[in-house]
Image (cartoon, rainbow, N blue to C red; front, side):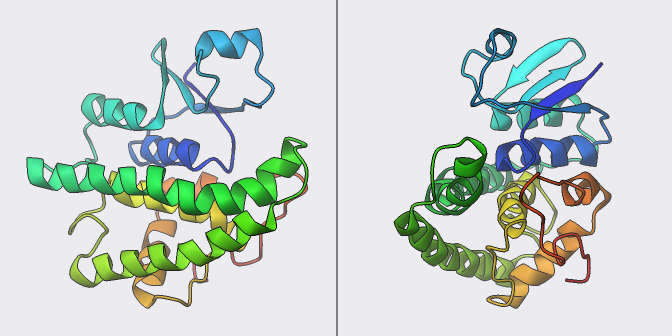
Amino acid sequence: MNRLYHVPLSPFCRKVRLSLAEKKIEVELVEERYWEPTAEFRRRNPAEKVPVLKLDGKLMSESAAICEYLEETHPEPPLMPKSAEERYEVRRLVAWFDDKFHNEVTSKLLYERVNKKVMKLGYPDSRNVKFGAQKIKYHLDYMGWLLEQRRWLAGNSMTLADFAAAAHLSSLDYISDVDWNRNQNVRDWYAKIKSRPAFRSILADQVPGFPPPPHYADLDF
């Protein structure tokens, strides 16, 4: 059986979930408490990280590598453009969200507000939360600037770059940390991607002790 070992609010897991769902690859979702690694989990991924995908008998880790593998083995519908220049732009933006956005925003807001409590690591660091809340404004403005010139983040077609961004923002939206009124272009973009069938399981996520806000699953938010 195909399985994805994941954590519901992990943006890296969500990016893979979105890619799988868009390509209509069915998997069983298995929640993995990676901060309490077992010998079995270490065998699946010695790096002790999620996501880990078991697909057709193969075990794969690292979200970027998994998504590229899915694109090569299940090319329809495509999430990467045809030209080298366009593929570069997608990869650049995926790295932007998984590196810069993650370090400046996701790790400062989601990890402080949720992960620390779940992992019993103490209380949120208010300095980190304040830093993340300030930095997300810059990223939303940058996304808005991109969307002034393009239909989607990396060009005129939806790509893996959109899923990477939506994975991070949806995780933050679960805890009401995205100001959707800051930029209309970003709000319209998220409404489009949030309405895709691939997003349904993401919007159905429930984390014990952290109920989502009413607008989280509302397609007309």
